[in-house]
Amino acid sequence: MVIIGLISIIGYLIIKYLNLPIKVYLPPIIFANTGNMGLPLILFTFGENGLNIGILYMVFSTIMQYTLGIMILSFDKSPLEVLKLPLIYSAIIGLIISVSEWSMPTVIGRAVDLLGQASIPTMIFSLGYKLSGVTITQVKRSLGFGAMRIGLGYVIGLFVAKLFNINGLASNVVILESSMPPAVFNFVLAEKYNQDPKTVASIIFVGTLLSVITTPIIIGYLIN
Image (cartoon, rainbow, N blue to C red; front, side):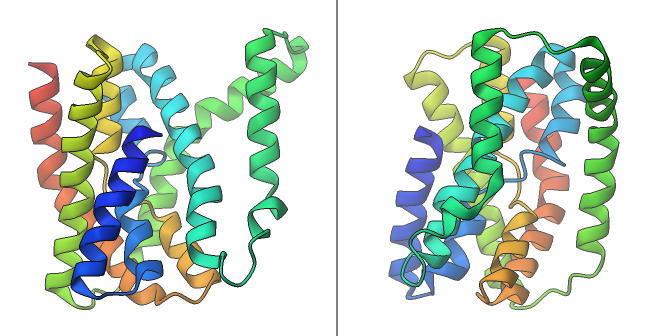
């Protein structure tokens, strides 16, 4: 929450200074691809223990995108839009079940486990499919905002980890997740709320290409 909050404030000030539309440019800076890009990288780099931490980070980020993200896009027109989304309620129920340590029946547990094992390759396929039809517009601006998402995420992730004395595996996962490129779902929401989806898609695409260079460097730093 602190990471998203700091990125939101800094991103908002930069976009205001550049006199650009907040609804178009702020969500791709705030919300990173912590799911279908972040989780496979964490599993590959830090194993199952790291993946468990990464899933918690991703779930929280997703909840924030479905609340704060939708509020940014629709609050002036429909303040209660966020209450219509089933993900919010399912996430709350999942957290309650997790905290209460309730055990699911074996049959349901195995089915959920199998779905979980299939989720990582499905996420990778989904990312490639969604990006395959994207065209790049305003290259310099897309590059700037894609780099901003990765750079701000890395610096603020590192700052927050040190501020709250988060060390070891948890620190590495937080920094890596916060350094991911813009989430593909930013495009889905931009399209739904008619907020220049072509520009948003271009930022996502260029940011994802840029991450091919930045992510190995960040991972190399974290594991050494």
